Amino acid sequence: MSENLILTPQQIIRKKAAGEPIQPDDSEMIQSHTIAVLVENSIGAFIRVVNMFSARGFNIDSVTVGATDDPTVSRMNIVTQGNGRIISQVLRQLSRLVDTIEVIDLTDTDFVERELCLLKVCYTKDTRSEILDVNDIFRGKVVDITTKTMTFELRGPSKKIDAFIKMMHAHEIVEVARSGRVAMQRD
Image (cartoon, rainbow, N blue to C red; front, top):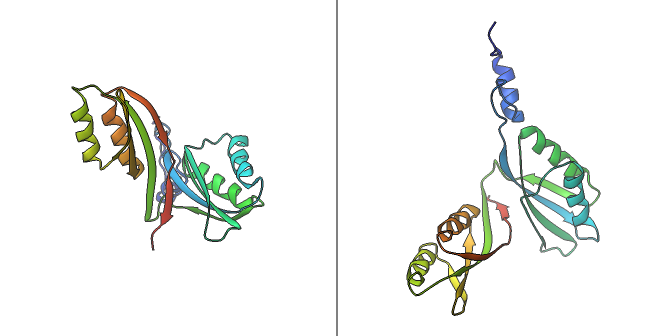
C-alpha cells in the first residue's frame, strides 16, 4: 500500500494556508513573520505581550517598542517564526490581551523595514583598508576608532545587516548590537 496520501485540492489549499505539511514526509512551512501591535502605553503592557509568548512557548526573534504620535499608544514590532497555524494562534492571542488596540501581520503585505546595527571589529594595518572597503560597499559609517578596533554603524533591511556581519566574520568581530526590526506597512 502506498505511503503517500491522496489529498483533494481543497485539502491541499487548507494545509498550505495553515502551514501544515502536505505529505507526511514534508516539513512544516515555517517562516519568519513581522507583526505590528498597537498597545495602550501603560505600565505592564509590554510585559503582558512578552509573557503571552513565553507562556505558550513561542520565541521572539526581535522586538522593538516605542511611542507613536499619540503618547497614549505604543507600537511594538515583533519578529517571530512559525507555521501558519502557530502564527494564527499568536495573532488571536495578541488580539485578546487587555492593552491591545490593533494587531497586523505585515509578512504577506508590502512593507518597509529597517534595523540599526553597531559592529566593533579588530583591525591591523594590513586589514584596515579591506574592512573600510566592505563598510563603503554597505554604506556604513565609522562611529568610533581606536588603535585596535573600529566601530561601524549600519542601517537598512535585516538582510543587509546579516550580509554585513557575514562579511565581517573574516575579521575578528568583538561585539555586535542590533536594534531589532522596525517595520511599517506601505500604502
